[in-house]
Each structure stands twice: as C-alpha cells, then as structure tokens.
Image (cartoon, rainbow, N blue to C red):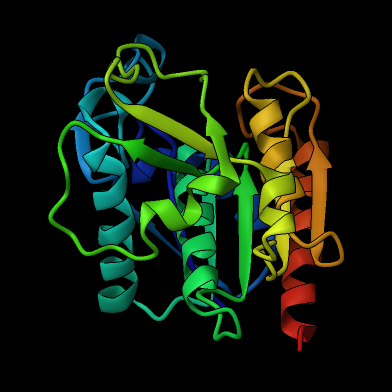
Length: 253
C-alpha cells in the first residue's frame, strides 16, 4: 500500500516523517510512505525552528489570500496524477484538512466512484475549508464550483496560525459534518482518526471524524495536545488504530 503524506502548516515533509516514524515502525508493514512539502514557503514559529531544520511550508494560508486554497487543491490533484497512483493518504493537521477537502470534492464530481484513495489516516486532522469570497480570483477551472459546496459550510472562526489570519474582505468557511451528511457526501472510504482531547483544535478533529462513514472509521484519543506522542504505549495504540483501518480498506467492497 502506497501512502501520500502531507505535513501540517508551518513545518515540512521531514517533520512529518519524524513525527510518524515510531508509528510506521510499529506497524511492521510493507506499506510505503511518501512525504511532500507544502506549496507555500513561510516563516514558522520559534518552537518549530528551534527543533527542526527549514525551509518550512504551508499548503495554503488565509494570510496569503483565499486563492491559495483553490490553488492548493488543484496542485494536489496534479501531484496525485503525476506522482501517483496512491492507494492511501496520511495527513497531519492542515495536511489532513486539505486531503479531506479534495476527497469531498472528488466525491461530489464522482458520486458513484472510483474513489480518490482507498484509505485516509487523519492525525490531529483539521476540518476541510472553502473560500466563498476571495480578493484575488484564481484562473484555475477547479470543480466543483464554490457555489455548489458553500451550503455545506459555515464561517471558519479559527484557530488561525499566528500571522496568517484571514483578510477582512475574504470569507473562509469550514465544512460541517451534519451538512455534509445531509448532502450525501459523507466520506465513504475507511478512515482512521488520531487526536488528543487536550488539542486546542480538537473540535475540528471531531468535526472531520463525523463527516466520515461511521461504519468504516476507527479512532483513538491519545489524550494529549496537538502532537504525535512518542511513548511506547501510545505508539502501539496508534499503530493498532492505523492497522485496523488498513484491514478495513483491504476488505472493503
């Protein structure tokens, strides 16, 4: 099984490689994990710079403009087409949010399949976003159009990465689980959700969880913050959660 792996905002592919290394080792699987850098280079917070080497990236940024989200979705689909196919995906935080967004869009365009991935692993996953009002319009003919998906969203009130807050004249919205479900767009592939009860973004993690098919999802609350714990017990439990999701994907019809 070949995984496409997307890091969180303000980090890079090496950070996610290190974050998930213990889980991958504990999985003891022949799956391959391929890590990619975000599309926008940015300055990051001191806590990251003091531990990891740059440069650092984000996939999109409210501070850089709403067009960055549309461009990120289109560029990610190009990456999948040129570097894929990928059987599965893994995303941390913003990386998870972007993956969920393109999965939802793909399902809207292809209601009867095929699926973009067989499996998704969301770690501290952010909720997928939609820009309904942007100062700079993208030239990309990205589908589905914003007005087709806007009814499934509500205004996104953060939390924002410091220094990357939305422009006052733009509108960033967040997909809401109940509206996604009512529209028949529940994420239908097997998913794993790993999150921490003390995470300041845990409501987004749970919103993302709830827009995935409850019959095909597994979850684990590691009890911590916005992080991937490294203690042996928690690593084993997170690996077990991922393994259960892989098993669901391998037996899905």
